[in-house]
Image 1: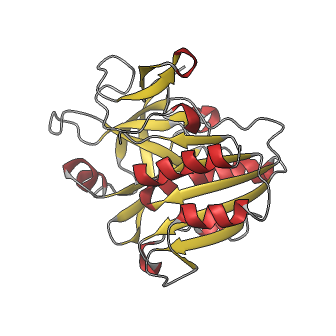
Image 2 (image 1 turned 90 degrees about the vertical axis):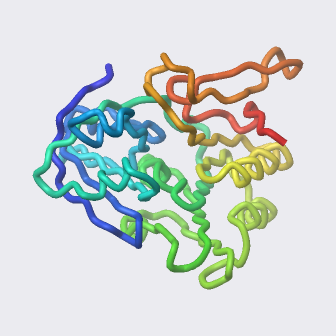
Length: 265
């Protein structure tokens, strides 16, 4: 069941320039949310901007009845979102979309986030650790100051590795290169990723090369968020690999098996 909630903002803090974490009190959504799902957020009480903003669920605290989102200010909607203060009410619909599949046989997993794409992955990593899985968490960013590593990772039990484009912290290069180096040293039962399309394309390539299942979360512009407007479709392999079809990221995704997604060349 999708929940429509005029929820109370608990905190809305900038963690690095232009990036915020907002914690929202919404017990019903916190109870139902799964890693990979998202909220559709009405950022004002008027018609400008008209459309809601889809933002993935970053964390949840069932005991506190709260969920958190991690977002980057990129336009009018997210700029307005950054102005919310504790105690304000905000209209959210969720949880929407499917979730990252955590099959029982996936005991050792790698989680790879690039830039703001790391937003839905902390929730996944914490759920995986709490269910007894070995988790390697790789985060990639332009530089040290652009990393979005959560303080919650420190005591989570995850093995954390960092890749920066300029080498200012951790591995110098792309997170996919770091993942490839780990795949050559150890085996994983599954890989999960979210980030820019070139990175996801690289994840798909590694998934096929090392025969490791991979699941990627796609970030597309959405209109309605419930499958009616068809503005967020992506192309996937169909008919046993002989054809292609379009799927809605909002309701068929946002998580898809990497091998099924067709990236434009």
